[in-house]
Length: 152
Image (tube, rainbow, N blue to C red; front, side):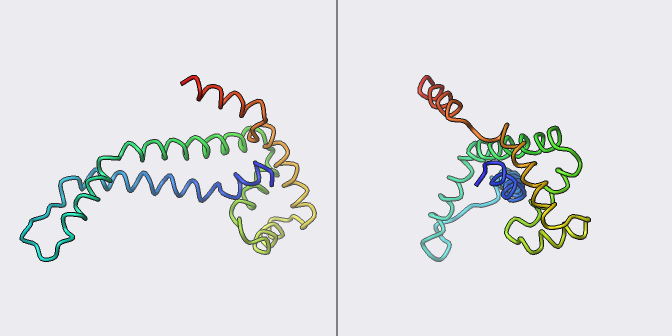
């Protein structure tokens, strides 16, 4: 599968994941002092629940790392779609991303927009080829990344 196709198919899910992480982090920050426990509470698991919750709160910086990763990928994909594709290609890619696991619905939506199945997939392939030029890592790019990681 082409890298661009993979990213387009996961685009909406990644965007939703980033939003969920931001909301979860915000809720955790707002409820830091909201939970307490007492040894007098019935049951012995309250302390372990409290400790697990505190561990989540202590690791809020991990949320920032994941949020940044998702935002970077999504922003770069959206910017590439906006700047590199023409209007028809953008429309086809958006239809493609709205129905990532349902080709029948994808084609039905394309037909509603005036595209035949063949035209839809031809335009999609053209768009994926264009996006692959900037989204797909080449072997030399991977080598540069690995070299930079070793140096750090």
